[in-house]
Image (tube, rainbow, N blue to C red):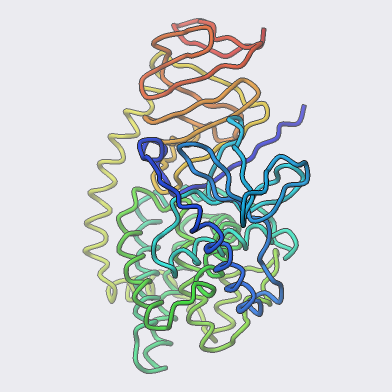
Length: 429
C-alpha cells in the first residue's frame, strides 16, 4: 500500500507553543489579511501572478482558525470580516501550505510578528507555497545532511559571508569580487559532497524562492533589507543545524544582488533550473579549474581560521550527542512505530542527522492513523521516512502512552506491545 506523507515545517518550538496563553484580537485579523492582499497586489509583478489566496491563521493553544474566506464544505462560520472554526486534532499545524476542506490554504501560526515588514515577509513566503504548484515548482524538500558536517558548514558560512560583503560593497568591482568568491566557495563545498548540488538545489527552489518572495514583498526599503540580512545571518550562524534552513539565506542574498543586474530574474527559473549554474552565468563568473586552491584563498578573506576553530569545537560536541542518540534509539530498549498516513510538523533549525539511521528531531508532532504523537525530548525518523523511533514507554494506558519527553494519544484499533530484547512496537489489533 502506498503511504501518504505530509511534512510541515515550522519555526516554532512545540513546548513553547503550548506554554503560551495567546490573546488574539479579532480586530487585527482582517487588518493582517488586508495587508497581505495589498502587498501581493502591489507586488504581483514578482511572479506575474497575484499570490493572494485562501489563508488560515491558527491559534496554537486553542486551535481556533481565522480564515479570510470560507472552505468548500461549510465547516468555517462567517464572523464579521473573517471566517472561524476549530482545527481538528488530527491536523498538524505549521507555517505551510496544505489541502483542507476542498481548498489549498496558506496556514500560519499565531502570533504573527509585530513588525509589519516581518509579518508580510512571513505571510507572503507562505503565499508563495500556496501558489507554488500553479507556478510550476515541485513541492520538494531534500535532506542536506552534508551541511551538518564540518566542511559543509564551514564553506556554507564562508559563502554567506562573501555574499553579505558583496551586498554592502560600495563599488561594482568589489561587489563582483565577493560574488566570484561566494560562487567558488559554493562550488568547492558541493565538490566535497557528491550529489549535494542536486539536493541543495531542490531545497533552494522550494524554500529559497519562497523566502526571496517574502523578502521582495515585505515592503522593506533597500537599507532595511540590508539591515535585515545582517540580523538574520547572525541568528542563522547560531542555529544548531543548517540542514533545512540554509536556503532561507542563500537565495534571498543571491536574489538581492541579481535584482540590481536583472530585475525579474526569478521568472526565468523553472523546476529544472540548476541555480548554481544560473548564478554563474547571470553574474558572468568563470569558475577556475584549480577550485581547491582558489577556495582556500577566498576562504582566508572571510575568516576561515576562526570558522574552522568554531566548527571543530562543534564537531566534538556533535560526536558526543550522536553517541547519546544512538544509545537511546538504537542500542537501548525503544519503541518503533511505522507510518501509514503521516503528517509531521517540526522545527527545521535543530534537527540532527544520525549516520545512516535517519534524523533526530528534538521537537515534533506527528498525526497518523494510529493517533497523535507529541515529542519534546527527541525522536528518530528513519532515513526512508518509514517509521519513528522513541525511547521506551514508561507508562502504557488505554488511551495515553508516555515516555521520557513524549506522549502518544493512541487511536482505537492499535496497541503497544513488548517484543524481544525489551523493545516495543505499535501493532494494529
